Image (cartoon, rainbow, N blue to C red; front, side, top):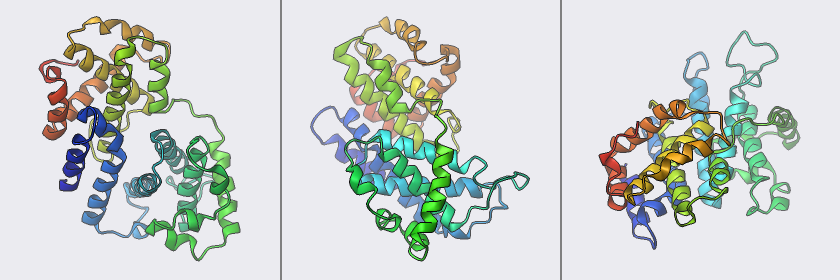
Amino acid sequence: MTEFLSCIDRAQSEVGCPALRAASHYHEVMLRMWMEREKAMDINVFNLSFKEGTALEQFRQMAVNSVFHYAVDHKLHEKTVHLTCLNINRLLYNRLVDHEPSSRDARVLTHDLFACIVITSLRNAIKNDESFEKSELFRIDPDHVWRSTKYLVQVVQDRSVARINQIEAECLSVLDVPSNPPLAPEFIDRYLGVGGWPEYTQQYRELSSYLVGLAVFANTYSTPLRGVPNSKLAAAALVLAIKVINTDFNNTKYEFWPQRLAHYTRLTMDDLKPVIRGLANLLRNKPRWSSILESYYGKWSEYDWN
């Protein structure tokens, strides 16, 4: 936790609005917290028993942890990180992995399969990241991609690259199904792209991305937001960001935004209210996070965001 707070403090000292600059650091924040949690758990990821109900979820968290390591090292865009984590969820929680013994055509999560799920998820996501050199991505082998990730290096170093490529092809066939909910950053960009108040648009985008980042991190633990779909979380974060910013500027015209929200989601405000309340409570329950916002949006904590 000390590392997390010091990271926020450094973000505050940078040029620009400290509350919003903290948003650009949330991948590093999550990585630091993951490392602290990993040290506290002191477990070997490959010794978990799949007879325990939480085993697959712990593997998913370790996979996401690996992604955060790579994202920070290579400065990946937040959209790439979101898509990678979404891919991991889709590969782990379907018939590719035998998390229900009665499932047919499923398989036990072996070392090879676990490594390929993470590698394939990342490769698939990086295809959409224009800042990454694509030719380099497909020229290197999995061991080189994950040379800084201790869990996966020990897996791939003794395995045939051809075998890993074979499993990767199976993973790609699963990911070939179009994803229904939009990614959180993509949803926010799409929604704000139709116009509105241009002087506030960047603040809406940055604050809502910050809220989504905090919620994604919080969802690695047991919180009321756990299990909320990505698109629903993004919509709620955007509405809360608009309310916080507009209220602080004594602008009460945010009511028209939910109407425009209907162009991008079938969710109603009644659907979003519990998530909006959950996001606000998440901040209120973390005094340091709340104080960062309160320093720049002084009235935000005075309102009931139901």
